[in-house]
Image 1: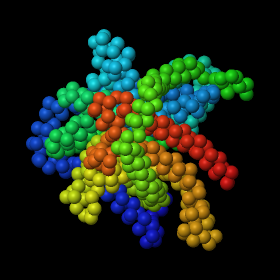
Image 2: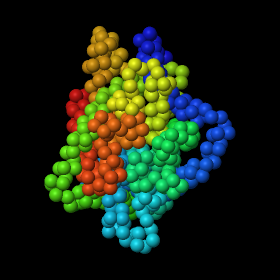
Image 3: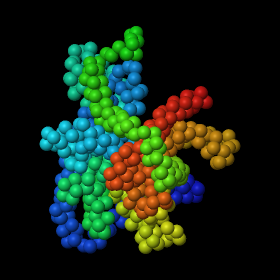
Image 4: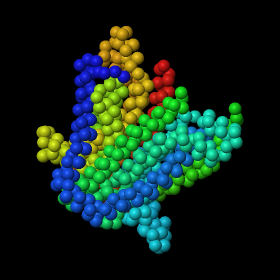
Amino acid sequence: MKKPQDWRQWALVTLGLLVVALILLVPLALIFSKALAGGLELLWSNLNEDYMLHAIGLTLLVAAITVPLNLCFGICLAWCVTHYDFRGRKLLTTLIDIPYAVSPVVAGLCYLVVYGLESFIGRWFYDNGMQLMFAWPGIVMVTVFVTAPYVARILIPVMQTQGQDEETAAMCLGASGWQIFRRISLPKIKWALLYGVVVTNARAVGEFGAVSVVSGTIINQTLTLPLLVDQLNNDYKPAAAFTAAGLLACMALLTLFLKTFMEWRQRRLMQRAEA
Amino acid sequence: MSKPTLFFLQTPLLPGFGLSFGVSVLYLSLVILLPLSALLLYVSDMTWGQYWFAISDPRVVQTYKVTISAAFYSTLAVLVLGLLLAWIITRYDFPGRRIVDALIDLPFALPTSVAGLTLAALLVPNGWIGQWLGFKVAYAYAGIVVAMVFTSIPFVVRTVQPVLQDLGSEYEEAARTLGASRLQTFRKVILPTLAPALVTGGSQAFIRSLGEFGAVIMIAGNIPYQTEVSSLMIFVRLQEFNYPAAAAIASVILLASLTLLFLLQVVQGRLFAWQRQGR
């Protein structure tokens, strides 16, 4: 890599920076300037509103359930398709892409059809005192669907390039399956794994389409932060909407920072293993 | 080494196959396959007449047109912008390169409703950017395209970037010293190498744009017959408590996106084979 040489290359770089400024930096600046437009006191009082605190709590709850579930699943799937060769392996990796391709609204509707009150399963749960749709369990379920692919998708290429020589050697030396995983595989993938957690968390916190279908948008009950942004905007409360948006933007920036850091660490880990 | 059996193409050496395979398959079935097939089952209760009526309503047909055309234009725009960004990040060392590299993923990390809210506020006639534009962007068709561009730009950059990195600048320089012009070098050397990545990134961006909901509805204005997208139509039918119609429209979108996904897999395989042959 070298510094741009002539005017053409400088022009390209300038054009690229202009694009970045226009479509990425300006929106970010707008969010924070609007959130702070009414002064710090208004920001603080907006943050302390009941609905805001409730939305923050619900959003964190959803992420706290979704991320560990998808983490376990992602590890299993990535391990399965990279360490064994069997018929249907390609199919598994294609199936995991489905949540990427399916519109989140369609996903929400699918869950509504299966677990809503009109269906047999939903009715059974309701009779046993648990409402799934238009309540927090439904929100968790669709979020699990939408964020299912990320950990697996991040781990698969990492595990593929690392191969399994160390694992096989450990097995020959008599290590058990669990020991192999904990002592050898896990340290090799730990940064990629954390990176997967960060990405899954960001998507879980930010999911809008699927959640809006199954939430029923009941204030103080089923409004997550992204839904609250929409709701406040519809209620013509731009200052409060941008306060919630600012919170989510902070989360996004933190995600970018952690992601960059972890990618760098994983790359270093792999380079060191090669050397 | 070991003979392929009916199921295993290679006998598994490491332990843990049963656990990892079992968990994966169970989870995939419960979380992904069951709900999707339930939707199709639900739709199959309808008669053909009802189904056709639900999906061929003029207002719904208009949403297909809006969604597909907007996704198409946004994909074209994103391919150009994404290639530009990937190019400058991998080729040139300029101040702020790392920050730009990290920021590319912002649309991915920022919740879509926040993106929609922000873009709409920027592009309204008296907004920061909207005041400089001579035409209406927010609450109009152009707004849909802008929202789709914003949300899908990381897909193109992140698929093209590694390929450009691997390619290095040797081939270009060789072509240039052999007397090729800049345009020829780009068309005959760089573009063919990037083709698979561009196709993959472009299709991912397209599929993503087709399904985009949060960002789009907050900027589109949602005027019936003009700026409604198909995902919103499902939502509208749900609010009318017309579940079968919502499910019918959803099944159309679902089948379309699954077809695209499988098509992409096939095309990818072909493209890579073609590229290997070329070398």
